[in-house]
Image: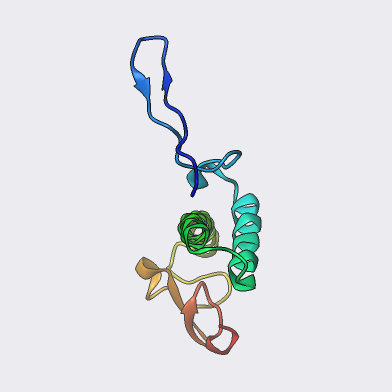
Length: 127
């Protein structure tokens, strides 16, 4: 069984709640993408090995969920930035794009191309 972290008293006299994360772990929401991804890969490897007990497996699973959410958050933000940049760069004053694609679905981030309809002009067969 994992020992309960000790509570500490702050300088203002209030009691600080113990940090539920194991020693050395940063909050998943503050990690850069690469660090979150690398830690998630390690957690998956440990869970797949089957060498952890139930409590540790559950703790690893919960940490992995938080890390996966952080990775998705960073990727979603990057995709939004790319879509905004692509949309800004590609649209001309008459509504056509510099690559000849229609911007009929511009409000949803989709463009129609010769290969098919896809997010930011990605051909359907490339997804």
